[in-house]
Image: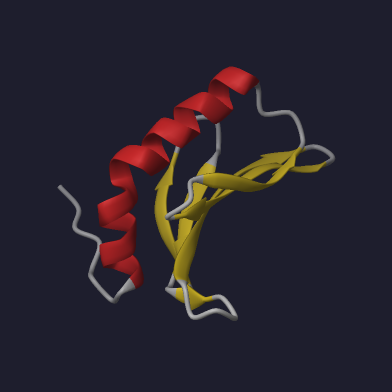
Length: 91
């Protein structure tokens, strides 16, 4: 299951997954940034806890990707909490 986190003003949608397990039993989640474009989507997908970019397609700039990485790093504990069944609180 994917959980919607936020939609930025430019239409970029941020979603996070439930906990997933690799063959070796290691838990991970994915955080996806997608922006609809005329031709499809700009996409960047991170894997936590490694913070590795596992997919990058389209035209997100290096500066945008760096900002997304900061969001992922600062929000890692929160994303894992949501993935484990926590609720997203709104202000």
